[in-house]
Image (cartoon, rainbow, N blue to C red; front, side):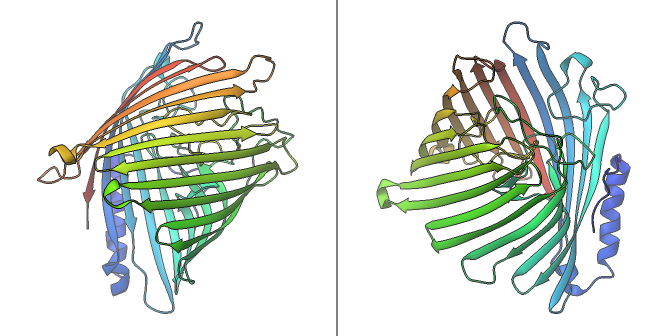
Length: 426
């Protein structure tokens, strides 16, 4: 089951109608289908303010406020050797504040007739059919992958989704296999399923041939857990006619007893053209995090090499250790490092309150048409609180602050205030 190329927009009445339909459908299903089902409604209130600080900026700031509704339904499976189930994802974004001179936050969908104005509301209904046999699961329809070669973006009001087929298998103990194809992507501020493109912002220096879009992202991967503390993985992803990518990852956790622990995250990717671009990139990333009690200190390094920057599907996330709030430091030949500190206030008697700050610096960027090397830095701070118990349990409030300075891109000061609450329906 797949959604059409253009997802249907709907208002609040349709959102609740969807909930009623899924409830009614469950009534005629098998006991396992019903007993294994679950549903939730997430409310996401998002304020976004981005000030452009560089001289001559075409727009002084992007500032919008919106309310999101995310209705998720996951059925169980019917009885028998092949279990059948269905998932549904209902998304609705409602404008609370915007104006033509402040659009472009990524929270709201642009009006088709007046691109500089945000629509009052937008939404979509995503359906996914699923088949389970033994320890293998096939999903067809709307998907939110978390794979190195296809990483769904959920950093705004509504999440980005892919459309396609995805087979995941855990038949062999400690081994996870993935295989599939996506043919469309639905961006986080859109209600349309669209052909996929390669991200080419910043100083990627990617040159495309005749075809600017692709109808197929093929992927395959294997992840093996050697011990509870050590996992390695290989993934392949190919955006047909644009690029091919090979990705190796290693994750390890070293327990130091009373002295704490050290987490290691190593990533290496090789991206090549697929006949319709000049993509040529080698990406190396390493992140090491020392944790003791409520404190965590992380240090990261990332190095790009080759003719272009790192390649991934536009609108998704690139699986890079230095992908942070605004930048990913994946430009052509860029070298970057990161220092990060986290603190959990539960140690001071305030469970649910956390703090994070980090600083990243990148240089050696090869900017087309310039002899001077590109340089940039970013500083991020997050303060988050999740109510741990009581009638408002799971209510979350997060403030995200960031500053970016660059000699080849925009200078940005940014604030995001996000309030979330998830209500389990059953």
